[in-house]
Length: 142
Image 1 (cartoon, rainbow, N blue to C red):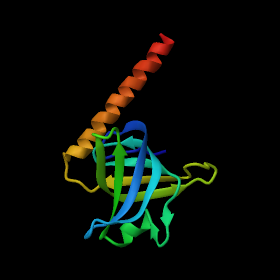
Image 2 (cartoon, helix red, strand yellow):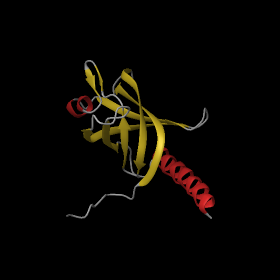
Image 3 (cartoon, rainbow, N blue to C red):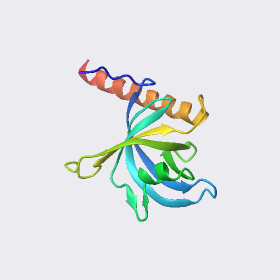
Image 4 (tube, helix red, strand yellow):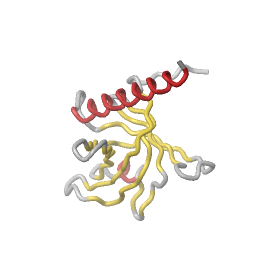
């Protein structure tokens, strides 16, 4: 069995997200919003679970791969004041129909420059949420 080699360290997450497919030139929404879950995040991308990937004639995975003018945005809303929208590119997708609510898993790469403020903020917030969750869980068994 080969060892998995990721480009960047992943932070486990369980946060609600929204995906929208936009026209890059006009920045108009073509498809979505699609609800999903952020399962992990790094400085280069994220792993997602989504319930739906098609809104005819668009497909969240194939459309941006086939047409570079179409951009997939990962939207995360922590509060009214703290909302992030990160342009992304789908890298891989899988389907497991045994999972009713979120049968699609997707890996996305952020289309931002290294050190992008929104990506840094997302990673920071996920670390904080994870740390709080770990603290609560550890307190339960102490």
